Every structure is written in C-alpha cells, then in structure tokens.
Amino acid sequence: MNKVLLLAFLVFLIKTSYCARTGDDTVDEREDAEDSFQETDDLKSELTDTEVAETKVKDQAKIGLTLTPDKEIVLTISPGDKGKKGNGVVYTRWGKTTCREGAELVYAGYAGGSGHDEHGGGANIVCMPTTGVGHLSTQNPGHHTFMYGSEYQSHNKIWSNHDWNVPCAVCYVPDKSTKLQLPGRITCPDSWTQEYRGYLMAESRGHRRNQVFECIDEAGEKIPGSNRDTNGALLYFVMPKCDRGIPCGPYNANIAITCSICTR
Image (cartoon, rainbow, N blue to C red; front, side, top):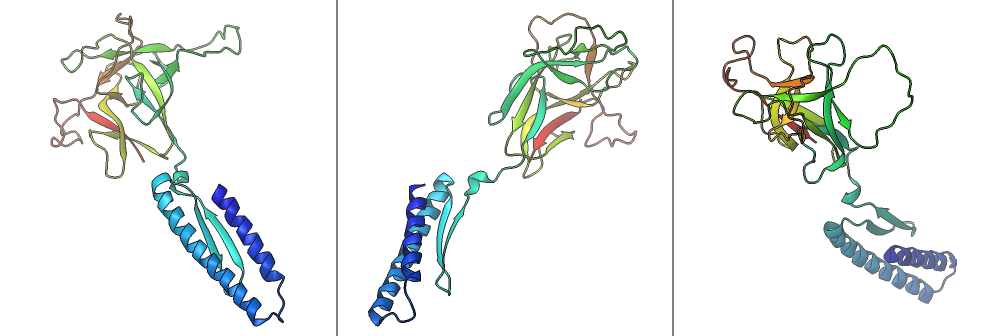
C-alpha cells in the first residue's frame, strides 16, 4: 500500500510539472523533462519487476506505470491470483461429522428421512442439525408426516455398523463452483478434487419408501448410543443387477457399488 501511495504521488508531481510547461520551453527545460521521464521509466521498470516477483510469492497486487505516446502517465493496479476463486460449493458428507482438510464445516448433525414402511414423505435424506434448532410455532400441525433417524443396514463384513444411526457433516469449499456425485468409481476425473469416497446406498428394494442414492463415506461413523433397532429411514448397500442393462464387467454382481464426491 505504501508503494501505491508513493507511486501515485510521484505521478501527480510529474504530471503537474509537465503540464506547467508551454511550447516555448527552453532546451534545458526539455532536457530536464526528458530526464524526469527517463527516471520515471527506470522507476517503472524497477517497481514492476519487484511487484511481479512479490506477486508470485505473496499473491499481491501488481503495480504498473505506463507513459503513453502523448506523454500521459497511466497508473495501473491489477489484483493478484489470490482473488481468483469460484463461487464456492456446499456438499453433505454422509457418515461423517467432519470435512476434509481445506473444507469448512458448516454444521454437523444426524441423517434423517421418512419411514421405510410408510407411504409418502420425502424421497431423500437430510442432514438435521443438533444445535441452534428453532421453532416458529408451538401449534401442533395436525396433518403431518414424520422425520426418522437414518440407520445403517449392513449385514456383512464391510462394516460393523448395523442398526447404528448415521451422522452427517455439511461442508463448504470456497474455491470450487460445482459438485459431482460419481457412482461406481473411487477416484475423480482429472482436474477434479475428491472430497471423499465410499459406498452408494439407498432404501431396500422390498420397502415402500424410495430413497435417493447417496454416497456414504467409506469409513462411516456411528452416532454414539444409537445402537438400537428402531429402523426409520434405512440405508442399504447397492448391488448391480448384472446383465439387466448393467454390464458384468467392469461391474460385479456380488460387489457393492462405490462412489466418489468430486468438486471443481
């Protein structure tokens, strides 16, 4: 900032000195003016080189001093790379209470959804916060649907999470602008960042309720003290129905489908 003020003051002095001269200036005065402009060019070169070097290290603004053919002095200030960011993107990390390093935790909570054996309700699960909960009315609404906690249903050796409730974390990444849920892969495409990877999960095919396919973290955590068979909104691993529109290879009929959450 001090360099910017100093450079701006120098530009003001030079322009004032130049404008005060008339077409009847003496040879000596013209030589003095040329010397001033030469010093300005030298200062411009020195400052520009210095600022560019600092920009590469500190992402500072670049300062430029330009002398036009009409002897007009132009001061330019351009932002460094630090200001080049996306709009930011928010995603939910299912099965975890934390975000990856570099992502901001907006809030953590419990996964919730409609009952597995009920008609109606929501088709998705939502991350219900556990703090700061507010109420707009104390009146019982009468007609309603229910929000249940979501449980892992994992009768297998992949996890030991069966009947435990599912935590969640809502994460914000300021330097990204879009999110992709990529089924079937444990890596992200080139130029994309992997937020986390895991297993694709949904409601059981024999239940009344449909559930949006969600990517649950591969190291799914358990909500402490929730190991009770209360059911509610349930999450099951997803298997490919081989040779029914899904090719056997690369998919395997006996292996749970994976997923990745990617941002860019």
